[in-house]
Length: 298
Image 1 (cartoon, helix red, strand yellow):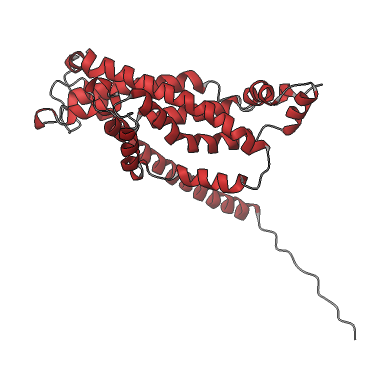
Image 2 (cartoon, rainbow, N blue to C red; image 1 turned 90 degrees about the vertical axis):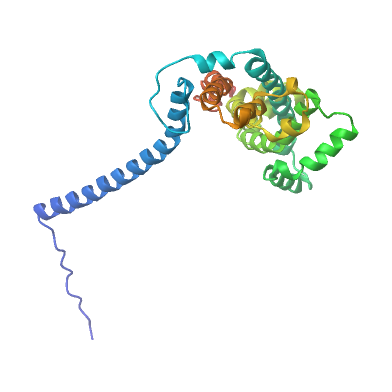
């Protein structure tokens, strides 16, 4: 017995109905965009309010915790622009953080290269150890570190503190640098080795120029992490003339049992300048990405 299927009817909506459906979907999309944009503006305002307060309080002779419109004055900046309050702590911070960043970036490159290029049975456990070290809070190791620094006579030593800052940032630097280095094709290194280049020449002349944006990212993140580190220099440095700006800012919170909001805001603005300048100088190199196109031999 043959079974015949009836032809399927397709209902075609009129043009007016299709236009109404598109209109409703368009309104839903527009409403969703308004909600998302409004939420982003709200979160942006939450981050912007402390910055506005800092700018206004820095030029307010009677700065307080409240956000008020000041009568402009430069007294706060004149009171903090001296050797003991600003110049020496800023110089100490630049020496320690700059030296620690340089040391960390160089060691990260040298450690990330074999992890990215060579296969070993210990490679995965070592990477997991590095990943665990990036999440280890610095406060958890400061007591044994302080005891070790006392025993090796490195307490109250700026070079010793710089070495520890570099060592503390090294796991994060190695992990980031290795991920950036994985993006450089191996065929370029093989071509360089055929031309007679050794391992260090391949690293410095082939790999690093191609992953330069990654090196800049590691440099910026490492310097920012060291520049804002309060706990390590506060514990390892004892002499007031050796303290960096991240620790000397604490003096504005305890002077005469009353917070000096105007001077604190003025110092915070000056304290932020090195990080902003570092980002402005290096950020232009981040726009081009990895320049692999011109590295291939024709």
